[in-house]
Image (cartoon, rainbow, N blue to C red):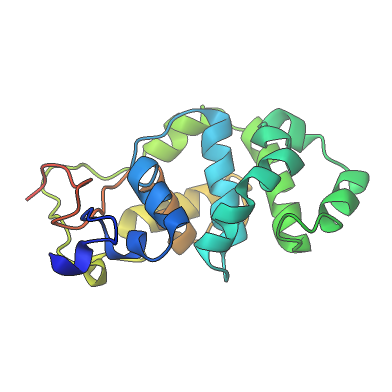
Length: 192
């Protein structure tokens, strides 16, 4: 358990002790059940932007992403056009990756085409908590699961992009669809 203790004396998942921004995110957001179309669209988008980068980079740019992408309102982002793409690609406060910018706009449009609320769609892939074993270390935490593969497949079928199984599992962890806080972490719930 000593490897889980941060400089502040709090026992948390080891990655949460590597930077103050990570500690704050771990303690107040990661693994908390999240609902709401804009909130889930934001997390889906940020997970896609994170691909190939450090999550810390994304966390530190999150407020700029929110400003740049109209608070992650899917309705507003779906209306973004060429001028918006140019504006986003010129914005040094965010990650300026054309494919990821276009994916975010595309995914906002895919949300508009859904025949079910985004919450309902995403949460339908959450595995049952019953029977899940609490990971003892981060090495026991998977990067991909059957549920994240199924989520990625369904999202792609519905026109979403930049939503592979690893991105989907990270989304599931971040939004509380799964609880991967390790044993000994103060955020760990009652799983055995």
